[in-house]
Length: 422
Image (tube, rainbow, N blue to C red):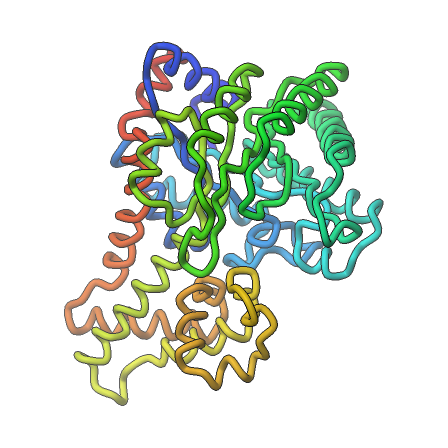
């Protein structure tokens, strides 16, 4: 990565532009596949906007922790693949690599194993250090998961303590290694579709900024604020509260910190269009783009069925469906009794299997059987004159551009660079 300006410089330029009357919000995209990487970077290049690629520990992590489910990426391979796409398309814009939901117990298996606190903290710090050495630009410090508090949220003071301890350790490491300045994002609570009370949010920022300042550490670039959004199945089932969002944005701005909204998938255009007006600095979207890519493959499978002889066709739908259900990652996104459903029971229900494939097909792209069937289908389609790869790319770009347009991001990179004197 060779950004012309650091993420801190970019955020400072964004504040300057907003003081001049510009209105926009920024977008963070979960790197669900190499295909999505290319679509994202191509669109950001074409429409001239900055992009943040937000990788959770389940998606991208060190090999010692089992790497990520996306492309088997560790931090180094993830960075290398982003750089390869940038080189391929001649990308000259602003792309920031960000750790989303780093922190103790943020890998599913670590939480399931109920690791002792010292071990969980030590592992997350090792993961963060790998992020820094690989060239990540922003780290989300999120100590809001703890198996000891499975039935409720982690206490406010404990979240503050762990956040400060982690950032202090990372800044010490960064200084010792001579690594460049990095941005931080802090979280205040589990993303459960509730609202962050303005008083609690204010108290969190006040305390965190003061505690960091005591140690000579600057304020974070972002603090996560809950506005009522919540992603389940392929809908946003939360209730976006515009008044709360405006208050959180105004409060964070007093500290020179941006409010970052999570779980922004599937929001309506009317809500997205209001985000810049309400002062929301940035929003993360991930599973929606995985669903868009999966639906594109399933649509192509219908074309293949109509135009390719039976003996030559791929078996993409059956393979993806079986692997999606077997992954059990759908338990995070479904509701009610489905969260406890048995895998064999789900596979016996064609309608339920189709629903889970729609939600979780993106978890299967790197499964050897699914990967092979996707390649076979695309090759078959190419023989009959259908460019399947371009179709998937087109569908992803359309989905991403809905957010970029509503957020007023088109042409923003040039404005940010000019504000920085570049």
